[in-house]
Image 1 (cartoon, rainbow, N blue to C red):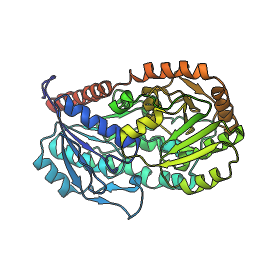
Image 2 (tube, helix red, strand yellow):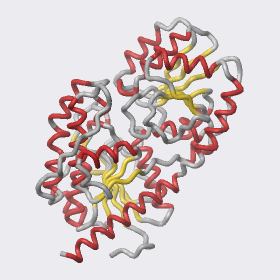
Image 3 (cartoon, rainbow, N blue to C red):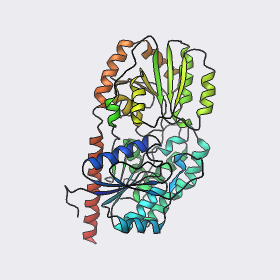
Image 4 (cartoon, rainbow, N blue to C red):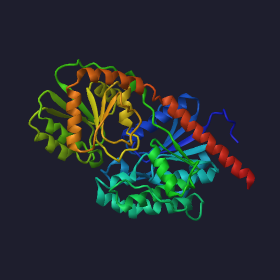
Length: 424
């Protein structure tokens, strides 16, 4: 058994382009940096495509499956037994940690089985929340890949049978397929030694959908904030023009179209909206913005540099997030808080980086968001107070806390695996 204070050998597996795919990759990047800084030995396994190796830690760019031109969430590591056997032979790992529900979770399971090491997995996605914006694609995923992946993972991990069926939680108006999604998530979680999510509702839903069998295996680990966001200081002078900012993937699930609708409803020339990010909805969003007659909308594209993103957020008067019942943590909220930027959002399940002092919660409808924009735009003193509250809250969301939470999960999984081995 690994001594309780020993440095750990950790293998982290991801299917995403590293480190530029978005919030998940930024979270993994921060995790790798922090574990290395604390003296743990980390090896990152990621697709060879668009891969920038981490500084200081070991790494390996692996073969992958991906149709040319498709986004990172359609990229998947090749989960081949021979590849897993070679990784296990080359590297001693105390624990393996997968971060996506595509090839990486299967490859990590194969490697963990070869090594006899525990397998930890993090759920960053809320599948049940995708039905409202992409019903056809999400419905197809529910009855195909997501449905069979948990059954197959249990086979790969050497866990026969199935988990008990609990009553999956459903939001009002959610389709029955959302309940099926939670059952699939529970099945995936049942095939690993421990699982985490930055959102408590994901952990709770998986436990409920397993009829309580997964109680004790699930852990809430909030993503920390990179130093770039803590260092950022506002450079743009406060003035007559109030700047709202949206930052994230331009996909339907992020509901940037709702932000544009809310912005247009204001009908004011003393406001502007900056939009950072790219994605499948960008063309339609630009067309929508071109029809807005009052105020200014600027699309700034994708930022590779964390300092540049942090500065853009710090220079905004209000950070706006319109995703609803989709995000797990909404990492950008914590990053906005760390820069000292007030927040406007509409999903009451998001709790990291927001409080009544630094954020205004509205309903998800365009008119509700628009009313929130107007309320904040006309309250400069309130914005100053919210900015100070954001800064204070954001500095509590440290990367070190995230690291120690993960290390605690790793050590618990290692101890449980060791105790189980001695009773066999």
